Length: 224
View 1 (tube, rainbow, N blue to C red):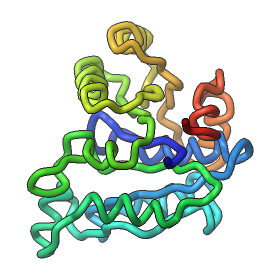
View 2: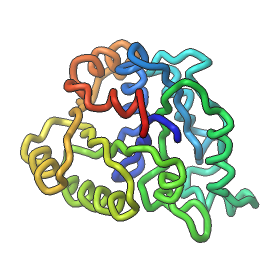
View 3: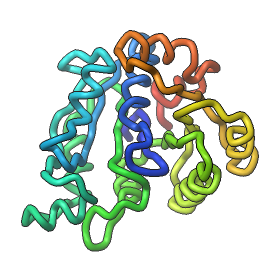
View 4: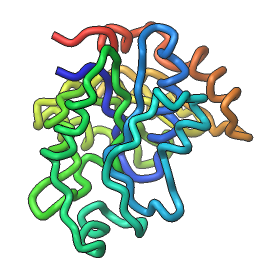
């Protein structure tokens, strides 16, 4: 069984890549980490692996660069269709299983949990296939309570373990309290809009503001 975390979100552009980089900073001293983006669309304008390498200060051996890389910034199922191909979850799972080493994985999803991957499978199905606990990245702004609770409910219905939530944006105590109460989940950190967003600034926040109680360390070190 793989060790690590699957970083998902309530939406696209919510901050999954930045949180993934912050996790690399936060825990690479405690355990060996590798980052993986299984599916990337719009590769001609976005490359989350490169962004994590830069923001997370990652070395080459901390990155697993294999995966689906498609043009056009659209849903994976549509990008695959327009490219004349089909994405298969089993092949993705097998590719990381062949890489199994004495390390923990930070795996970043594409979009939210119900983003279609092919005609019958969603991002949540890939998460089930990998069996990694989920980190949910959510905005702090109006609407986040509903979006976050819907995401948490779907993950639980799929039998996935939820490691916690990371909120991104200007701090909103009432929204945080509602997500923790109604979602029965811990908010592991509130990432402000770092201006400028630099490697050093993100590392400083990860040390001071991410998972202060070290809840994630056990998940990264061992899996039963």
